[in-house]
Length: 232
Image (cartoon, rainbow, N blue to C red; front, side):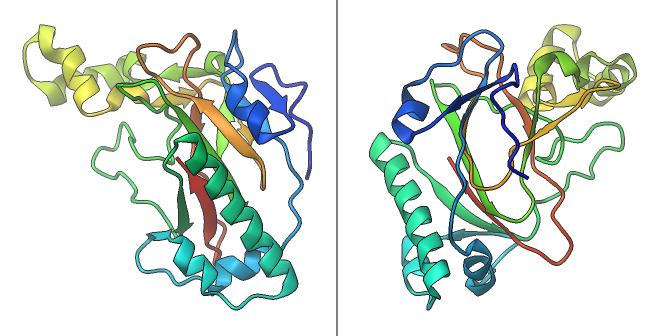
């Protein structure tokens, strides 16, 4: 399972948290990976946590209340440490227990949910951090292997019908409803799975960004299994 990302033209591999936050995106590299093999039983934690809604935020208090084995305790220490590192850095990490995300079924010709390849956008300079501790893990794909959905003629025509307004307002409409953030994989495009335990920093679309934003998607969950995901 532990494949090396170091030969991947999109990914820069680092070996510590300090390196992760201090390494800048450059050229085609818009995903930075602190590659780790984590000890500990993350499944035990996932199974003990209680799901209140399909995506449940887990607090530090929730984690500390679990009665865990030695391996489970080791996993908990790792998660608490990751949360602390990111908080000290100034981020707002969230630990989520996920059964499933809401699927976008409003339109049959374009999907705008997190299962669709998309980029994150922010009005201020920021990065997306994420780590999957248990369950299915997210995918990224290089920018040249995808096409913005709004540029695909058949989809664009339908969006124009949907907009049904002045041409000069069409681009604003696409942004307002986040249609412009979503991508379709080109034939032979190959996603890269982020795998378990690695802490990732992904480039976000914002005014100061000097690389293309990282195209990523949430995975379809494994049958009968929750995901445990840190994200900020």
